[in-house]
Length: 368
Image (cartoon, rainbow, N blue to C red; front, side, top):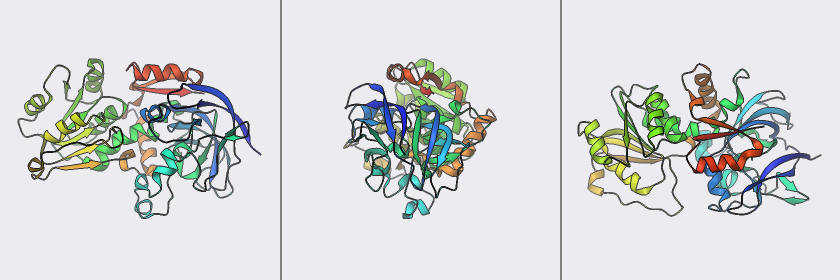
């Protein structure tokens, strides 16, 4: 029997989010029904809502959900009704990358999470007045009072931690943290540069502050975000709107360059500057996503000093171990995620979108 719930529906590319009654399909053997408590708003949601990706619309987005399990399918073993869960991306669990502990590089990642809008078998998870809607977004479509969620998107978490304080862990935060911990892996005395001080960049700053890196540089054009970066662990900040970035980084590093760079802006010009700022054997992690087909020119000879450029999806995190560790850090105050969060009632989702677009909110979290 289907479940009727209230969801934020995007009718067409560029249209606003509108609240509408929708029907969830019955949970399959490896699915659960989750009562949403909070859901983070991410630039990926806005990119899809704008029509920038071939996700089927009308549809229900949302991929940083957190809530309480209400019902589970017959074969679900990892969670039970009443469990608190953070929702993240889904994956097949059977391909080589999934088996190797890298589900963010699942062979079926794109259709199952970002552009398919359906289950792997092609069936719809959400409908309205008998017509299927785009759903199954990151295995969750959590911009709704209740969500039908893939088992592999579910991560059981400590019930003592408020869900609105940890909803962003499912995407943006684990992406920034994973860029530092899973790719750069700073050693004693390392220099880490974070390009862009939004939610992902500031998460990378907080993560770097928990490593042996001794120089952590945040770069942005918004003075208030740079001040916050300082409070969250940056040892230096650079306002790229007022200072030449190459000169500033050369001065901070004594001309040696950065050991690690996290590029979160999606601007290919900034990406090129980041690569040029690397030290010998340094690594730049591409996190920000420009439009499909974007290219960047690199100085080939400049790369011969052992520089590496690495693309990254969702922090290359194995969610069942990574997210509970982040929850523990939030609970202990060692990952002060609350400094990034602004909360909005679910009905005010469009205001949250506007505030995010205007830079007034770093990480909007919708509450239900």
